Image (cartoon, rainbow, N blue to C red; front, side, top):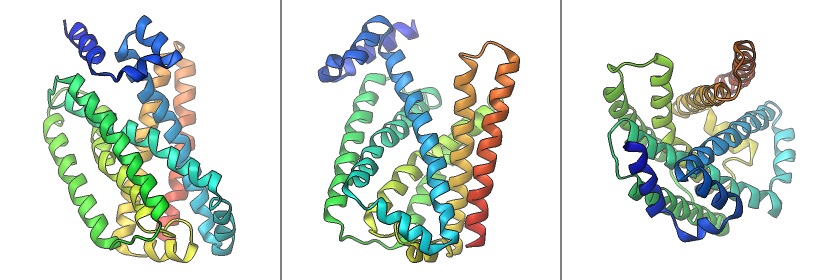
Length: 275
């Protein structure tokens, strides 16, 4: 019954233009919109995991500021600026669709068609706003005030989600996945936006180091690294279980994911603490 309601809701909610995309149209007709949206969420999640690892690796060059600045000059070219802007598409879709899943799964919001329209509408608005900020390139914001506001909102959402799921049946790992997702729902879009609200904040070693030396910012960065890597690891392992039937392969893949993310987590945490 619920699956039938969902299928009808998805079908009514989508923009007609999406139905003309060849691959999307094929799977929407053969497997249904819930399948398409679920896969879009998974694919964007995998892409973002690789981006996070690259991001941590890039920041590790802050140990030699001159080397970091030279590498950042490469990312200043138009091609890389365009890629950085396009990155907002999977990031924002994954974040906002994750918010929809939280509303649906935890808070019982069943108007999925309306929520999907909000997901795509807010995603498009965010991407256009980011493009505007990139073009302007002359804005500034108080770092402490900005992140204090964002962290406060994020923790309020975390408290709301935790209060709903902590005492219900379910593994602790599952609960932490939802809690970390709620935290990142606001933090990740805010982090990307901040990179363009304050030009140079991510591309000049002196500015990045000065920001990361603030105790409060260290706390923000630490929570981000831990939440992102846990959320990514749980997601990758969950996806693998749908396709790896052998317990040996499942264990091997899970071990590999945990090992790689633990290494990058150590690099990120050490960088934050040392700087």
